Length: 411
Image (cartoon, rainbow, N blue to C red):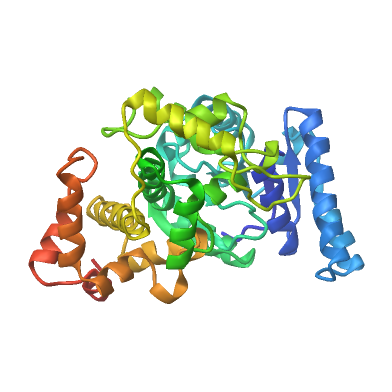
């Protein structure tokens, strides 16, 4: 199946970014939203983005006009949905909301149309069942900003047909994305590992570190940005909302910090509100350490009874990276990722892992899995619920093997 006509449901940040990615590739795209105000904001956002590209000399005026002509905005999509080859749902990250969209798509779309959800953490199968059209449904997890970021997680549901995956991969490449097929599960590959990475970064704040220290340590390691600068850029409430959805499903089997909760309660949502883990003055994107955050951290340490003793930069990096590696091994155990190299591709292209280090699994090989496992056991002495060693990591480390051997064997 060749995808030539696309619709996007939702005119928010992700919906408009996806629409631009499609239009930039030469394909027409129809954007709909139940809110007329959201549609107008989406239209204005796209126009402003293209105008900025023209002003910076990255886009010719004529090409800007052609791209704008390919994007249609209309709250009424009933006449459109029956003609498109692919519909991408980019609604609010709420399971019931997304199921409602899919239920409508199941009635309105052609039987051979592909239905995709842009969820970043939710159960693709649970969303697809609302259509119900499992063989033609899947996840297309774009990364923000969707018209810029190359990575695309193509999420295979339990009933997704092979030809649906093939069509999605062809579409992804056509719009200039680097697709990686992953299995269905909480957070898929990238965000599942991100949860563990950021958990350790947040616990470093509880122990006595500052956001600036944690970010400096990980940028010195080679990350493009530190975790708290990233959180402010994406929105502190994004991770917080994912946590609320996860709590509805029973929560996590280990403790996570409530520092993000305190920031959201204080209205510090990141760059969009001028304050998050850092302060942002005059609409600028430069993060400025804020004494008010120091107060939030001090109050949280007092609440949970921790006497602050700032960890070293090396300890911060070791904990964050070992959390990544251990969860990556568990993802391979669970067959959510097909290979360690897929995990490395996702983390290099979507999460700013230093390219020269190869990715978390390649870095683990270079470090030595025996050393990684020893560190995991050391961390587990005080926190066994979180630092339970992945069976695959234990098996490979004790056998003197490397993750790269799985790439070679195709397992």
